[in-house]
Image (cartoon, rainbow, N blue to C red):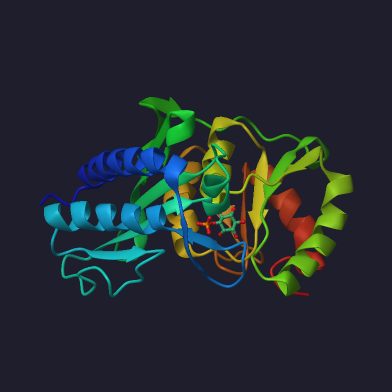
Length: 269
Ligand code: LIP
């Protein structure tokens, strides 16, 4: 199979479309299967079924690839991977929104080549939004080129964030938030990191930060945001990581970074 960025993106879009339909149909009839670290971290049957579908479709077309998924881990796929391409998959990002019937959850599929994300699709089915991007080739929303709106000053910024599942982490996140709220226009806790990140590209929020994400939360939507002109990274000049992800137009990113660094937003306090 061809490994050029456009064909990886096209496959990601096709599979994210099918997976989004499956998850959407299932949203009405979900059942709680399991919990991870706390009762808020619900994992639904649909989450697993959606990841299985994605894994099956990707490996049917590209059997030599590796698949890293939120639910299955690396070993559940073919795992080994001989092609140099690794798919990073979040079947349903925003599980709690999904469970409660909210619209903001997403299917995220990213393709990495030699550890660099080169193609991505993020499907937000209940909004009718399909985001796609290739590294160096721009981002699109429903087929139209997407450029993030220009930066606003921090005090006029609508800032999205999220909270971890463990209460010890949440206490520190609340302390950080206490310093952020008076310095920005307002805060949004959307409930899906993927929808927050692509929402930056389409102008629903101006900036975003969150601690404790995993690579599947930001791989695909981070490429979309980056290709729409946003900076996506961590504190202290680091790349996006589990310690912190920040995103925004470069000027706003820097202002937010200056605010967050002394607060230890990349730590648990
Ligand atoms: C969730 C994120 C959410 C974040 C949670 C969690 P999940 O992903 O998208 O915004 O605050 O910590 O990571 O668990 O619903 O796929």
